[in-house]
Length: 230
Length: 353
Ligand SMILES: [Zn+2]
Image (cartoon, rainbow over the protein chains, first blue to last red):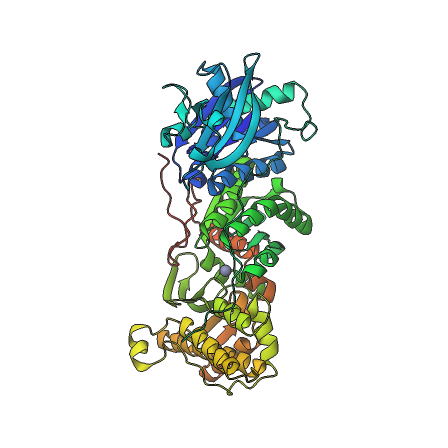
């Protein structure tokens, strides 16, 4: 059994997969309570799948990009479970899960854009191509103001929360997925594993290190000399 | 039956701590600090601390287990600092603790960081006196606590109304050209200085302040006063007597902390005082506190140094005391609460929506 977790968007959730089959998926919508809601989601997903942590053979965790505070919740959870059970933990670009869903749902069939809420008036984005009915990340992930993306990128049909937030982007359709579904994240991981991908071996591979795609430096300034106090 | 093996997780500031405690016996206290990464910023940068916690969490768990000679499967309960502290930093530890509890199928105990600072001495000096007073001084907090029962009744008597004492040490060290963190350097330099050379202000000790802020502290005015004094010297082209400034500043901090702590004891008829937090390592603070406690007939307890700074063993210790007292575990949806009040020993559970 594969456990898939994602906390990169306002959808906090867990899914349990057997092969490429999603046995269960539990998500909560709340952009501020990742720390509270992931563990219950995980517990409920395991119960619904009729399994326990002891049945897990691998963990796939969304590594963003996404707002850092929430993002770390999923990653540290995956890392600890991997340590506990002695099973591999794979990082998956969270935008890949949105892309997978968009293609499966038939929302897109050619080049498209995934754009999620990066706050500070920016989006996390990646461009995808569709090849043999599957998405392939063509560029990104990056972080930018939607209006600063190249004209050709902004013109692509977009999925994720980005097009709902910024008029500069064009939503792929009313059914375009908005938040990450952990089941899709697990499906992406399973396909890469089944294809024999060795983590870290393929450049631009699907299986990433289980660490956040931060894309931004911490906000911190080295202080100058003390202010003169009158 | 053997006493429970409790694993404690601490991540409220810049130390990632994993402690292992069996009953009230300390087995391991592994700490990874990101202090070096904050040095050039002159203070803890929350996002830098959170990133470091994520990187250090699993290696620190591994180190604690190796030190204690146990495997994770043997752990009977997990305790974690739920607050107060830096929100993003706390969240890494809380999530890790939940994963441990869920993965091991053992109960989770969210606990208050300040309570854990008090509880830790059970590992060093045995059962805690009841009631007791606690003076907690660090870069993140300055608190005077009245503790009738560590597992159910912690009362905040006073706290800093502006900077934490440790923060004032950092800022004054910076003005004096001493490295970060400032505490140990001020302590060292001050040994060669005259603590009576400069009379710096004692915050919140004037008669009027003693009515409204009897047990509260303030270090911001003191810090500004030191900066002003040093800058006036520099303006006049005179050398700054670093040792005298350090000693006089430190004396002002120590004087107020010890005076108010002893006052709190005598006024509440509590004859046991515990010092805790990173600044407990300050030599002058311990010296003056020992003197004043002896004069007032108060018994002073100071946990050993590595138990005073933030660590996971203190969290495990409080968890262990809660279990022994028969408290219920926390649900898996407890929040990390950056401003958790000290009187709230356990985080309040919310129901998942
Ligand atoms: Zn502390």
